[in-house]
Image (cartoon, rainbow, N blue to C red):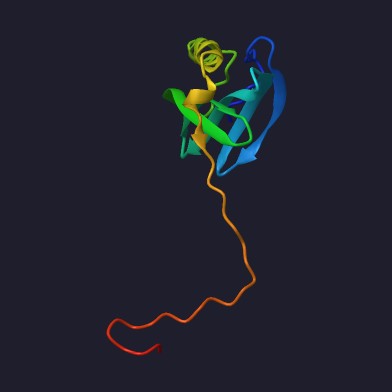
Length: 133
């Protein structure tokens, strides 16, 4: 199984942790900066004897968010990140992610959708051209 224990996280970012999420194993680093949280995530999704590795960046200010794919490549699931060339690919993608995350601004964020939950019974809908059913 591909492990991430030899990959260095972005400088001045805190280790947010590793774990299973939505069918992938992820490792995320984050930092609070410029009024919002920035993050870099490495994700591994196993597929038979291979796996897909992705590096994502993003930011969130509580009202909006953004997420971008930085790198995507395939690897043999038995490779370890302390073996070349996988370590170099992953490490370079994490550093590129750090640089790109640093350039995100509040203008890059997409507003979050706010949903209202109600306990009121919905009104009856009038059929077209006829009385309510």
